[in-house]
Length: 408
Image (cartoon, rainbow, N blue to C red; front, side, top):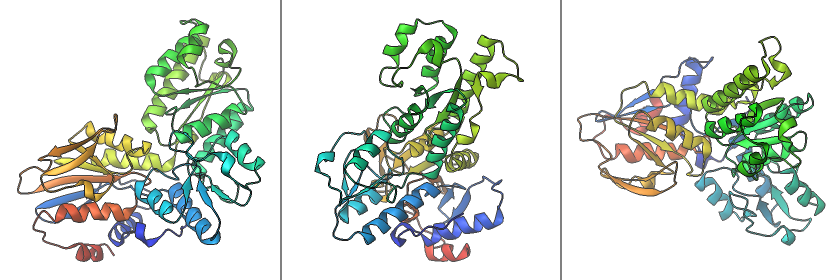
């Protein structure tokens, strides 16, 4: 896999050594047990896979090269390039301005742009409508497009099945940048509709079977279906794709549910299922899968608590928190300064985004066992900072430098 030029400020010698050693020992990625960092009074278990993915490193490399190659020019990002506060703050400190917020609200009007300006497309991609606006202003988007290749893979696969007459059901958060972009691209080729979760999927299925009146669809899925969507026709042949950072198990469950609905409603067999339902399993992102599977493996280790690190508006990170919370006390932080002391941590509720200070989060034990992972847009340097902060509260039998050398 390609190696990217990512600024050293985001790297960690400790984490790099750990990841390299695990990769050498497990080239086929079959071992999902965590890595033990034994400091004596505190034991930290790092997930097998975490941190920057291919798409994020690609985006960071392009963004920093763009800044270097365009000195003196105005440089804009359509929105947050990735969902990490440090990376976005670093870009802003270098003069990059955001045109929109995460939810598509305009911060700087497109009318203020000129052909000499540089506009970077974020890793989530963007809509065809916005691309058209930029191109009509004489702004070339292709050179500075950091769209994740795995997001583009979803678009390409959607186009392929659209050519075969299938409509698209997108499993995604309706207001997320990636979902908005994917919806725009799929809608250009075939009727499309967005479902947020299984509950909405079950309701959508009732329009397939005729259990619900067609007129209700347009109100229930208002703003989430493509122009000219005809329920009676456009739900007869479907394929499911996803926002790549969703829980892979959730997308699979949604896909399986709709597949079974089609089988029962149209009395299909395994030999003719493709007449009504397209196989789109190959659109699941490898990094999302790896990180979620690694968390599942990590959770088999007995521990007192878990800490998940990443941007609070990061979908893939939130799902890692969701997985951990189901098993043990879990704290969601975006950087080490959220660990105030051995007694207090500032935690983000992944569902409501409410920020609370949690007291006595570390148990009073002779040996405290902590599971740690991070989202796909979280720099390894931040993970190391969190580890350093935690071990500073305990007498350590080994220091970070010595531990780093032990993984060479």
